[in-house]
Length: 209
Image 1: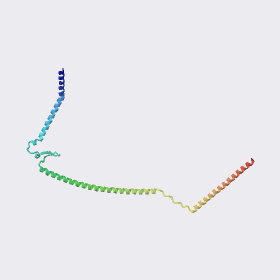
Image 2 (image 1 turned 90 degrees about the vertical axis):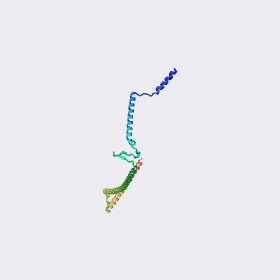
Image 3 (image 1 turned 180 degrees about the vertical axis):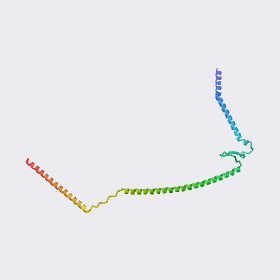
Image 4 (image 1 turned 60 degrees about the vertical axis):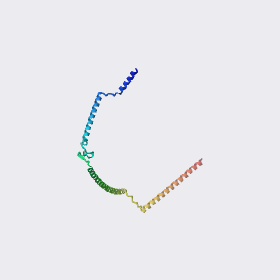
């Protein structure tokens, strides 16, 4: 019995160690993809062999071989391999670059000069415009002040009173003052008479009692 269980466990371990076999559809797809990858690798190998065929069929070193290249405009040219030709062309290119930078420096100086001149002329124009505006504002202010003065009425002329009119006014004032004094005196006498009559009435009433 123990031997049976041991063999059973061993078979289970062997079964678990076996890889799972995919389905037939999955296996077919994997085979097709692998074949396509193999064909792609073969095609790339052929292209590489075609590009490097010149190195296999020539006894010259790598730096001495003439190689073709295509310019940006689509023109096919031979790449230079001679060191002297390369140095000569490089010197010509450097000289052209230096001349180009010299032209750029001249253009920069000219542009800066024009910029300064434009700044000065603009400053003068702005200053002239400000002065013109200031003069116009002053003229407008003066015109407004003149209009305000013209709109304000003139003060009345002083009235000259003759001496005769002043004398008549003084006489009239004196007459009014005399009349006021006379009326006060009359009111005073009337008040005294009323007080005396009231005193007599009071006295006669007391005698009757």
